View 1 (cartoon, rainbow, N blue to C red):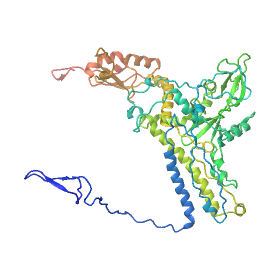
View 2: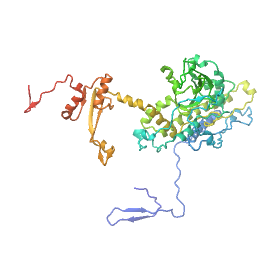
View 3: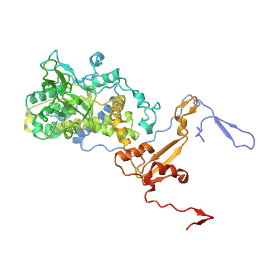
View 4: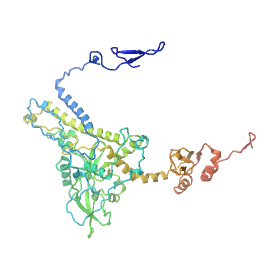
Length: 542
């Protein structure tokens, strides 16, 4: 029963002897004003902070929390037609007096939205990975990179009902609109873009300069990774440059230092080093909680008439490497960027258990922005700590510290989170690549304990000819692991070819009716089986 306003007019309805019903008239109360309920405050009021010296630290943590919420709201799905490049002015012009240094550290975070990037600069019309703008260009050189062709037919892989959570993991955010190849290239170009004057590009250029003509020091240390220092040691020095916190991880993949006698994938001629890539310097690879970069070189064959050029991460070149070295390659490549293998391995079970591309994009956004906020909090709390306990040198030198970069600022931090349709497109493509291996694996399924049953309902959903079903029923066999092995004759051929242990038990709801057929198809069921004699007049024959 609805709660009635005691001040409203009511009418009693219903006949004599019936339960009275009340009808409430709509509209305002007499007097023209709506009665307001008194506000009730629950709980006890907060106590005022007594330790005023910790107010700055409290403010820093509050700002970091607010910025976390702001990053999650700002970092919505990438729109193919609208790619935003945020450039943030990170300079602080005000001079900071010594006596108010701790208060001056708190800078107001401002958003400075730049103009939209011209789409013509990011739309790629070629399917190759990198532009051939490297040293020693030759007009006779032919790019033979065989990177994945993303022109796939999704109709063969996706059911028409995209909203089936149990089958494809589509979440409750609505259907994911699939990208075509041109739209995906546009988004992939934005993911791979590195501004020439950005901090990340300068760092990668310095790394290339250090690696020229010699084996990387990282290889001598037993690792493929070029890491920055931990944030504590960066901020503990006198030069607290927040730019070092933007330094990404870099995977150095230079196979000519690891394997000899590599050949051209096309003509099988010997190859030489052509030089490092320039546009872009390295591939951005999307990982679980941040992005890292894949740096390699370009190679050229030594054939005289036509010299083929290709990347160090060319799939045909990688296949020449030993398997234990191929296993170290941590990337699944797209046109110009890629995903980490760890992320792709996580996507498969999540998609199979109800986590669709929308939710996956949100999870990655939370993970990436949380890593960013941790670095930002470390930076500001270090400045706060130095302000409260200044050294003699810091007191003599009045210094201004710029604010921390915005997450999407391509000149500095250069953070990136893939959209839901980007994740969906890449996942479908990668599953299409491994689908032949999955089908081959299913053909090897065996079982020693089988169970079978027939169904007539499934036939109604299969294609019909002139309204007539082509099959009368469906018979399905499962093994002890609930897997569907190949059916009967083909199944037994696989058992014999692969020298598998033949079935020993078969469960049916109609044993007497099916035993003749099963014994004929699977003779192993009769091995060491002693039949029970038939009974006559209820008595067992001796």
